[in-house]
Amino acid sequence: MRRLWLPGGLVLLVVLVALAAPLLGLPDPIRQDVARRLAGPMPGSPLGRDEFGRDVLSRLVWGARASLTVAFASAAIACVVGTLLGLLGGWFRGLGEFFAVRSMDVLLCFPPVLLALLVVTLLGPGSGTLILVLAALYLPGFVRVTWAEVLSARSHDYVEAVRALGAPTHRILLRTVLPNIAGPVLVQLSLAVASAVVLESGLSFLGLGVVPPEPSWGLMIRGARGTMAQAPLLLLWPCLALSLTILAMNLLCDALRDAADPRTAPAAPPRWVDRLLPGLLPPPRADAVLSMQGLTIEIVTPRGTIRPVEDVSLSVRAGETLAVVGESGSGKSLTALAAMGLLPPAARPVAGAAWFQGRDLLRLEEAEHRRLRGSAIAMVFQDPMSSLNPVHRIGDQVAEAIRAHQPLSARAARARAVDLLRRTGIADPDRRARAFPHELSGGMRQRVMIAMAIANRPALLIADEPTTALDVTVQAQILDLLAGLQRETGMALVFITHNLGVVAEIADRVTVLYAGQVVEEGTVAEVFGAPLHPYTAALLAAVPEGDGMAAGIPGTVPPPQDLPPGCRFAPRCPHAAPACDAPQLLAERAGRAVRCTRADELALAA
Image 1 (tube, one colour):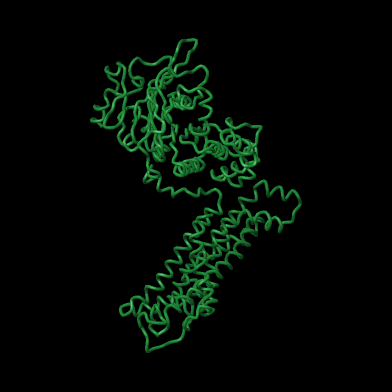
Image 2 (cartoon, rainbow, N blue to C red; image 1 turned 135 degrees about the horizontal axis):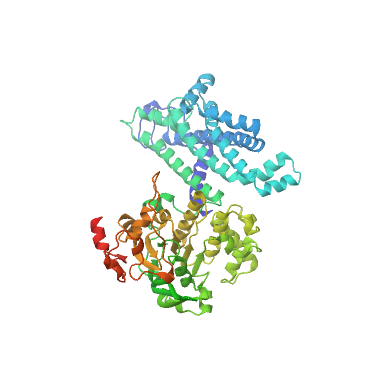
């Protein structure tokens, strides 16, 4: 709500000045003094006189009164009528929907200026005519917004519950549906008011609005145009007043949108920042939050000891996103579980270190690991349905994650859980907190898992394929949510995935794993722009583009018990040579790491 204070205060100031115009003791705004025409600032007229000798400051204040009256009146009429039509059309469907929505399609066919000319021709110019024209222009927007929101709300359980109680239709619409769609309607109202101020000025400038000598900003601009060479300030003042008012109203619209819609992340910058300047906010620090060096994991099996993860090194800094990619069986999840201290009993780290806040995660006692898990380090798993307890309510599970690390009462933890659900974009968080996991969609369950993970503001978040099995729209929402939370808290993010499109969108650096080893590491731009390892190039070639066919990678990832003696990718590599039969070491190449003896040769050939 704090974001509303500044723009709301500015808009309120403009409105109060306009309302107080009769009490300010200003000169008559329509009284002419030809002897002082085009006079500059003087005592009693701090902004000077216009082309007819009228006081400019008085006309600005009274012009605000006229412009805002037209804007608020037209927007209010459009809001009331449009919301009513949208409610009826969305609820009753059939003929009600046809007349409510299709009639708006007919109205949209008329260009605004043409419609204004038609109405002015029939009714004559004036403030009343202008209010009618603007109300007609904004009516379709309110109808469509309300209609779409009612269609969405009528299928919700809380509406069905009221219908089951036998409540009459008008009570359902006014007491149940309308309060739940008030947010988008309120935002539409603020947008309409801001736009109406501009349109009023424009139409008055064209002679289709306020009739002289009544003051308005559009008429002031129209009058000042002819004398701009002799008195340029006469054009400056109404333009400045109009620009500042519109700017304040636009800021208020943005703040109202965030305040009214709980699905909007309050602190998230626009999505294009992530795409054009990935990693810009916040700037990464030089110290690594997690620094893993030479991790090797062994599992004892009846057929002997295997190493599904061998010599894996990676690091991630505060505010940075590290993507760990590779095919299934490459060791991505085991690497993450080792950092969390959640390896299965049969697996154990036998080499390497994983430094976090000055401690080696691979050598911590279980009690120390338990204090870190869910607080300083958190993890989001791939399948939220199997990760959430099916017999406990969502709110109780989130509250449990909070109380495990914070000395809060059950009531305070519950309130905090609802707030976390709201922050992660879950609509109606109070009701969702009382739901069981099977009552939520896959996207909502994943948001619940993210809410549990960030409950204690972790310094490191590990996301193990959190968007797998989600549709594209929900996947984009989850990525937006993670990016916004990362910017808000500055946490480091390790994102495990096999989707290279996701990596290109959200990650700063990428580590490519194959058969338990790191084969390439570097920034996303460098690795995707000029891959050094043939496996990385093959992964990129396997991503479908447009209508073209993706190039598959022949063969499969070798099992840990049957690894090739040299390069593990050699049996599938089109560039394999006798030198690849020797063990491959991870080497530095121009600030990047690659495990291929022919990397320089292949890079030059490319």
